[in-house]
Image (cartoon, rainbow, N blue to C red):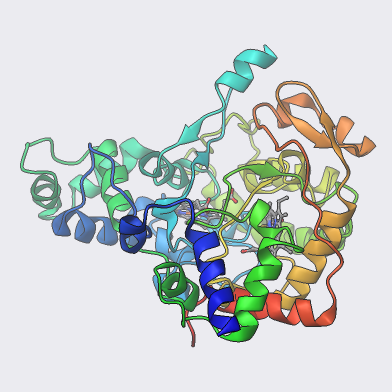
Length: 416
Ligand code: HEC
Ligand code: HEC
């Protein structure tokens, strides 16, 4: 009896923000008015998601890095994009991505004025976010106009676009490509995990240890301060690691060796790719005779461990809180893919959160931790992002609490 009451109290607590009648539909993402979901559109979106024709060398599909059969991730510490370039980040799962609170865009030419910069911080829609990898020079290295040309040459595809979008005769365009992929991804709902069933009202879905773990997650662990809402993310940027933290240093050692190896491996390829075909499309345009790979390698060499995708600093920007759905099946962990198992990840994360400094303003709407090293980061590298006012610090957890917490994280995942 006591357990039942407690379970119901917890259930009420986690669903309190929502009217009861919405409970069952809450994990079904809402489609925007200008992009309603239809079977034909979803099918077209799936085709595009799995098609290597979207990349410049026609070898990389979205599904290369977000494999639907591998929890929409790729299992690699760092994903590999066009020409085998490591993108400096671990590809996240896309389960439930239709519930994502808002994607942070990259601003190619941020205005000089700090207030104007803060205002222009772009939050992308899923439709827009689905187009950015195509033009990212180290992911798919293509341009939208080139993709349209390529797709127009595929038999019957124009017609499929028109059918999916209601035969308006507009054929293939960038807007429709983004919309179709987004429609497909909205069908990749949060997995059918025990915790989903619990939140949907099935009070028996969680085992005792998982229930206790949920309590740790919400209280002593402070996890739900950031991993909150249906997507288990507040959508905010947090500096959860310090610039001189152990993760960055691990990155240093790993990356230095790897850079040398890569430089040799790529030398031939880069030579072949020159001649305009793989010119990058970013503001980081290399000088004559240089490729994006050279630019990236140089930056990484200068400040190893700090540069990721497009040579953009990782720690300088903090990290947007990721979802935790299906977390047991999405190793390796962290944006840098530096940790292989969930327990190590959680222990290290807690340790890092506990040492993360108190935030202070770094100007231009950005809050940094009180780490002197952060002050040295050029402003242009952290132009737009806002951080939360303070980093919630988890309490010290004893071993029982830790094992309950891990059990709860397991309940966010499909049981295998
Ligand atoms: C080379 C590997 C690679 C390819 C190809 C790729 N992605 Fe990604 N994707 C990533 C990585 C790495 C991230 C994380 C980026 C970050 O943390 O800023 C990501 C992030 C995303 C996100 C945001 C997820 C989140 O939780 O913020 C979406 C949506 C997405 N990708 C969709 C796509 C689509 C659609 C395509 C194809 C058009 C695609 N990706 C192609 C590696 C890839
Ligand atoms: C200050 C906000 C914050 C708090 C509090 C917080 N997290 Fe996180 N969490 C993050 C951010 C940001 C990341 C991404 C870090 C990275 O990739 O480097 C993350 C990453 C993770 C990851 C790895 C996700 C992945 O796919 O790689 C797990 C697991 C996780 N958190 C669990 C927890 C647990 C359990 C707690 C409570 C003990 C917790 N978090 C508390 C913000 C937070």
